Length: 155
Length: 108
Image: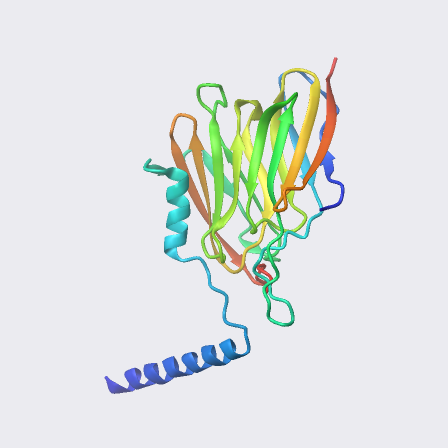
């Protein structure tokens, strides 16, 4: 009972000392998005609506990102894209980046298809979320895990 | 702000066709996360908005955050029902705008 606790305390002291040293040299570990930050980003996009997992939304990301500075991301939402029923917005969220927002794409019926591609920076291995909202108030969500070997947030 | 954008838009389109537009603009997209050798944070400086209009009407736009990679690549689609002009704009944090225009004619 006692041994693991003592080891735990020693390890905690070691980590604290490490952080103190890092702070002295001005290289404090970068903060990453908290669960609250991610929830806030989702709430701002989704409002009070209920979000359905998957549905017409697909998110394409690599399983392993060779370079965290430039990770391809694309998505597509199956939709009539008519004046009465089209996808208004899709938001991409990197749940473990220093800041979760990646980009928000806005569509119109003239888009023809609600799809887009870009390249993003991922600081480390994490879940990437896509949230989609239609003009009729429907909300969809998909999450993919992306493994990152070399982080891409300027480290 | 940035170098001239490289844009791929088909020049001739069948009426009603959904075309794919690919865009690339050079910009370092300084995220505001990096520190210089003295430990000072390098301030954020990014392109934060992209807009695509066809014959003056907004078709597609993106609110861009610092997690978008340097030299932002944006690919999207547009349904073209008539001939006209695409106007694409990229706006940065300082409010500077880069604009690119291209005509599209209907095939056949």
